[in-house]
Length: 174
Image (tube, rainbow, N blue to C red; front, side):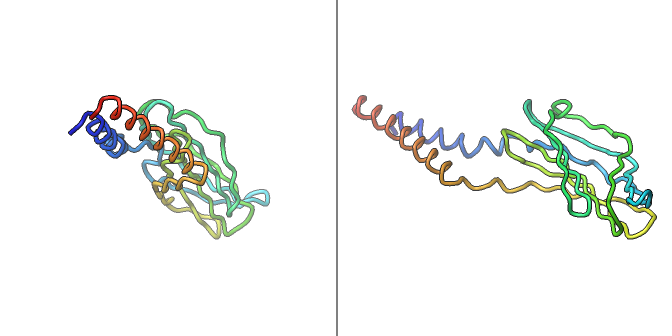
């Protein structure tokens, strides 16, 4: 087998194996805390007793928080995860809803290389004053397909790589 073919084969192997070798970055809820719902001042206060979180990811991993109250989304700005890996139980969290029935979700988004790669949601629902245990849902969103501009860029990159390999082969006489 010629050198260019070996290089091309190894490049493809690295391309396919690299994502599998990297651990999934995440910033997520580690357990489901209790919550209470209390009507107050024309609003419904939903209070999570604590915020148990854990995280892991390489440098440059970011997180953001989405607060969703009765279907209305309020996002936060992205921030760096605290360290490469760790866990902490943060204090209680109050999220308000406009009316009963109240459904609130606090979603942690893990962002790596500009793409949301993991989401963890802590949710509570109530139709009257009371409480319960929140639910946790963890998901790995599908990475969006390349659009026309991305496909064009990929095509140009592959064409250049092919042209460089062909030039190398022709010059070496292989």
